[in-house]
Image (cartoon, rainbow, N blue to C red):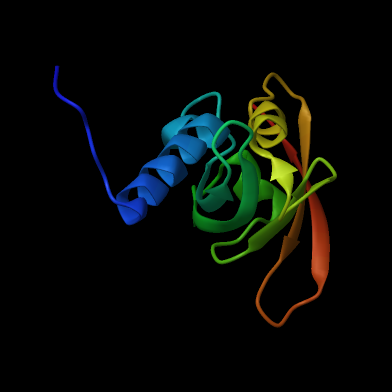
Length: 125
């Protein structure tokens, strides 16, 4: 039987990819599909069995999407999702909040570079 070996750097990258997959379902959850809110987010997470979100930055906002209508902009740092502070928000909590649909509200606390913090309410499709 063959054994898989990897250095700590490779293991760290693999752990991060798994955490991202758990946290945001590999971007499908945040993509601009009919059930999404029209966001793509660059996420950094840590932890393997219970990953937490270290940072989340808006990479893309789809024109006309619920996120666009709410005023979310590319470059905004998401510092809380439904009151769950980032850094430190458990990935499962962030995933559950972002998976809302059917007219439910997601509350995002945002901070752009050199700007005041603001909270927006995104109404899901």
